[in-house]
Image 1: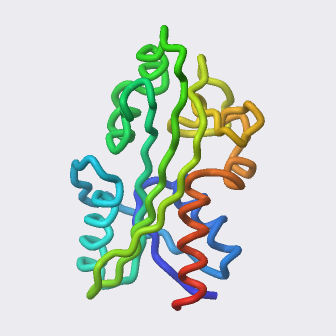
Image 2: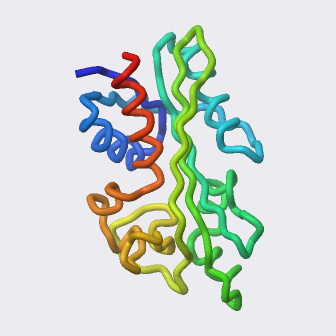
Length: 187
């Protein structure tokens, strides 16, 4: 089994990545910590910067993941600022912003950036279309899971689906599957 390091402070992301990459015969080790994250309009730029920084500092082949929720009625907000917006406004703040908005279309994007200490990062992107619920639903999720309804989720929010079912269709799964397939061919 191949071993790779995932640099993240988020235990939920780590557990999701570990479960998904296991099917590619990849053992994910958690490189827990806080890492610099630039402010930029592009998730690939953000993830690539962090991956390169961590790989150079640790001298290890690592990957990072950055994700964003893009809401059509809010011109793509919060997008690359999703983590900050979640911490400051939370799900209730997003629902308040959309209170009288009939257009609930949204999508999640996940970017995996893989980097070795002496190379440039390689990115893998996963996207899931969906919509924003009118109220938070479900208690088995984290982040925006209680308000995001994936198009292929049978009308349930990610939180209502629970981690196991969410992991079958999530934006993170899609980027991790691309990454896992690439790892299988190259390492």
